[in-house]
Image (tube, rainbow over all chains, first blue to last red; front, side, top):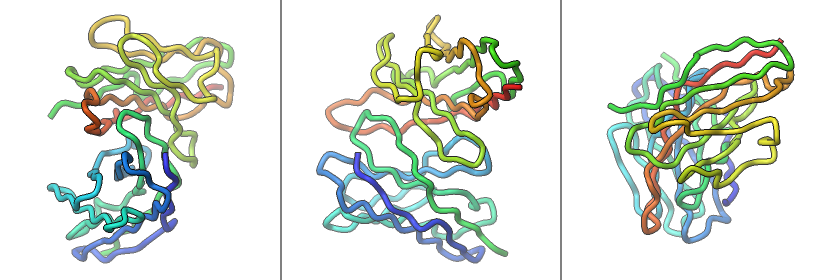
Length: 109
Length: 117
């Protein structure tokens, strides 16, 4: 699976959009982009995934660039409960999840 | 909403003892996984299981570890002789069948904190 690069930490004001970037320049055509988050030591929580089209669900939006070399997770109205470590994972269907260090997002009042 | 459950939430054991961590995956899922997270470190893949056999395992998953699906609902991780360095959070996950390249997300349980003294 391709390697990903994320900033180690980000801050966001409560109520504003949080935009979390991820670089995956070596992604191959059959690899999906997944986003998970982990609040404290809880189990990782699935957020969203996509292959090449932008995706949106009740939690977030995923914007994937046309060349698929990077993506952005958008939390449209961040709340204090969105404070967590966010992981961007690139993976072939069926493979295990390989977690990196992720981005520690702190939502501030 | 269906969820993965794990028991116990916290297990304390002495070095050299055997432990069994239990997981109940989401009922219609057929792929099962174990991960671990040592305090302050990243989540690490241990093993995946499908159709009653291991489909992939990491270098961490040595002969001290084994997995089993003893019945239609449980999925277990056994550590035969625990070491101090086995202290970690252990997460179970499950996912639906991968079909025609469609990628199904993995759902994680809340974890079991294993403390080896």
